[in-house]
Every structure is written in structure tokens, then in C-alpha cells.
Image (cartoon, rainbow, N blue to C red; front, side):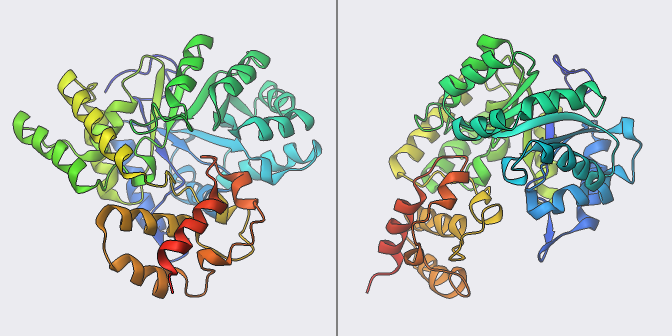
Length: 382
């Protein structure tokens, strides 16, 4: 395992993202999550990432039950975030922070990030003095490292890092499909971090699972490469190695929802090596496949339905996934799922009242209202 060049207390360069935990119905499967925590720590890694809104607050309490109650404080690194939707006035920030400490069962956080910063959310944080309050909490020993997570264009990040040189680390979305995407600007955003000398935490390295279950044409590219080289690298392995292969990367976070995913990721990151030239060429060809398919670039974070509660109860990420799968496989099964599962007890795409709540919280800045019209045209034909 490589030593972390930026924060020695972080073991290796692989973090456990706790937004997509194993579930038993509507609750976190605490037995499986505890086993995953044990195996992850036993492999030598120690970085856990959560936020107050993940899984409707159940991520924090699951970490309390499965990690912080069961291990001494020095065994793990815990990151939490200040999320805009949970405070409206300056005085609400400190009380929210204390709630987060209690929910996680700790006396301090190792890292505390200003969550999901974009131009609009940054403006709210400025109005509420959120950065100043957070830095005061740091002075009081309530957390050790101050950072941001970011979802916007490179020029917005450049302004934030110029305004706040106290920022120690930046969490960004970076994967091989989004790297040159003009709507996400992963490469340009990463280059701004380099410009300001900030270490980078990577989120969405497998793009919400989209880089695990690949279209057939893309899958053949990696399968052929594995046969040629006599390797058995998984799709997630290629994605993680791409994301980790830049000089300022501190750690790559993966949201793992079962033990098999975690073990595959541990294998990749324990003996980590960057992509070689042949592997990079294969990744470029996979990107070309994705670009040719014009899929909806939703990562399934579920902010649009979890944090802002669609008034029409439309399962937006699920409908987008259904649309993408139909685009990929041209399969009638997706029509069945749309009509008989995803819209039973929930709104159809055509039920959208165009209120825009979903778009205001979407980290990908997707034109959700327009996309729902496309979904309705595809699945609700008379």
C-alpha cells in the first residue's frame, strides 16, 4: 500500500464513501456494513466519508453503530460535510454540526467539507458566514482539516480557492467519461486544484456504477485487453486506477453497497499501479463508445428525490436509469419496469409540474425537466 503524500494519517489512497451502503429494505444492513468495515480496516485502509443527507440521515447513524462504537478513535479517519439544505441562518450551522457529531458518535471530525459547492450554494454559504463559522469550529478543535466538495465549472472553483486559501483539500467528481465533458469539466476543475496547490479527493470514480455495467461494445474493449495481457482487471478497477493516476490525488472514494464490490476495490487499490499506455488507449476507446450513445449522465446520487422531495413523487434517477438501459440494450424489459414497477405509487415522467426543485439540487446540473419530457415521449407513447 502506498503512503499518502498529503495527509499521513490517511492510510493509502482509497476511501470508503458512505452514500451507497448495503440496504435491507429502507434501512442500512448493519450486519453486512459492519463486516465490510472490518474487512476494509483489516486491509489497511481507514478513510470514511459521509454527509448529513446521505440515506436520509441513516449513513451517519450506521457509521456510529458499525464503526465508531466498535473501534477506537485513532483507527479511522472520518469526514463529514456542511450541506446547504440543512441550515437557513448563520446560527443554524453550529447546532447542525453538533447534531452531526452526535449522529456519528464522535467528539471531532478529521475532515469537514463545505458540501456540493457551486455558484448558487457558495453564495448562500457567504451570506450565512458558513466558511467563517467552520473555521471557528476548527480553531476550537471540532475538526482537523477544512475543505470543500465541488460541483460546478472551473472558474467558480478558482474564485472559491482564491477567496479562501485556508481550504486544505478539494473533493471533485473525476472519472474517465467526465474528464473532458464540457458540462462537468473534470479536467479543468482538477487543473484549478493543481494551480492552487490543493490535494484532491475524488468522488464518482465509477460514475454511480455506470462504469461497472458497460455497454456491450465497451465491455469488449476491456475484455480483449485483459485476454491480451493475461490479466483480470475489473471494470471498476480500470475506473479507479484512472481516477487515482494524477499527481494531486489524495484519495479516491468509492460508494460500495456490498462486500463483493469492496473486495474488488481493495484488490485494485492495495496493489495500486497507474494505467499504462495500452490501458489508457482502451479507456479512450470506451469513452468514445459512451459519447456515441448520448446517455443521460445521471450518477444516481438521489439528491433530487432525497433532499428536496419531488412534489409529484417521481423517481427521477430510476427513470433516467431506465431510459439509459433502453438506449443501451434496446430491450422491451425497460418498458415493463417503467409501467409496472417504477411508476406504481410514484409519478410518471409526464406528471412533472416543472417546479425546478430537482434542478436546483442536481450536482450534475442536468436539465431534468427537459429530460423527463424525453422519458415521457419514450415510455408513454399512446
